[in-house]
Length: 512
Image 1 (tube, rainbow, N blue to C red):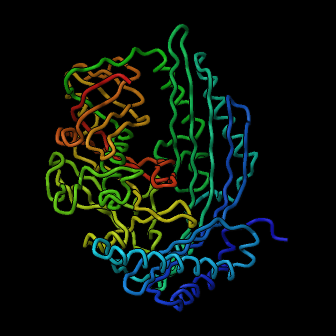
Image 2: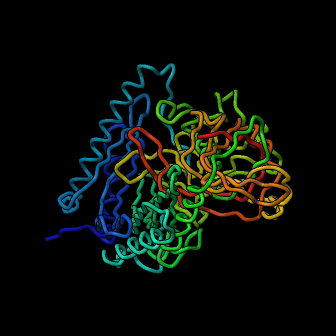
Image 3: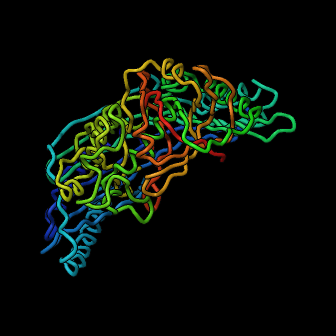
């Protein structure tokens, strides 16, 4: 009796997924159908202070269907759900029922849209290239071959080593996971994409306290879209094993536990940001407001708006939003974080989208539907957590491009300022036009040299003023794996990538 699902089991469903679109098109007044079926296998473990606390090995299977139908006005209908063994064994029936429900929802949505036809347009999809291809996962150590004891020993060893690295460390938590996923996508236009990928990463949380002082805590994540080698052998941006990475975060936490609170500045001062922090700026202040559904107010209720667009007539497209050396983009073809793919969840080929070119705002990430409304080409940024949920316009690898300056020189040219390293949870206005972002560490810069480290400080500025003030970008471009980018209602927490180089600009330092 079958008791689990393997990614290779999708081979048995491929022909049915292809036929599904034909069945969907046979239903009344149907314009378009697409189907996603996704399977995953993964293993993970968690340790507190070097002690094993949890381990899991599991699989998942999910299905999503979109139908666009209607008589006088087209509308979308979605259906998605997590599947079990019984659904897999009777997949033809499961898929047929899903298509029929999605079709019914599309027809009903069309009827309601017609009542407001003066204000609402018919659903359209911008054209894309029809593709039939298979993409295999990249790994040296197959996640499916990792044993529970192996990954448990890994997190326990990393946590134990970090805990013992300094007497002031009070608590260390380490979690890690490795997995492989595969998605079949088929559309009534003829696209059939079989796409697989791996994801492996680890998160470290550390608390340290010096005698008589306020405790300090830090957490950070490392990983890559590779097999288990991403954390076992340091095949990640940090170029560290999970054990080495845990010790590094422990060291930073100890530094903070000894540090004085950051000084507040009444005016903007020179700040130098390391690539890790710059990558967060690319994500939060450029990436999110460059999602076209957000800019078009389709996400306003639960994600916010965009400082790049008030409406189609009043927006920043073609206008200056940063210094001439600032270029920023989203690019699914880049490897190194969690944002790499070659086709999105509606079969659109992935490509780089330049949001800012030499300080001028250029373009948004989109879906086929929003591209049709806005009047540009689809660029491959319609993604979901898994097949059971409706895709959203999501970042891939969003980044600020490298500059031409030596990172050491960027610091050495500063007479009086601050060097800001890493990031913590940001606080940003809902349209992203201003921000408070906390680095993990803030160092004083005096006469070109890094000095005292401070804790509990935040950078704050008007977003446009900050980007206009950038006067140096380093050659040290890096991509970081981000495990938890949140968007949507209900919330989808998705893995993506952020990137950037060392940057120099101006901002205020505040407490918090």
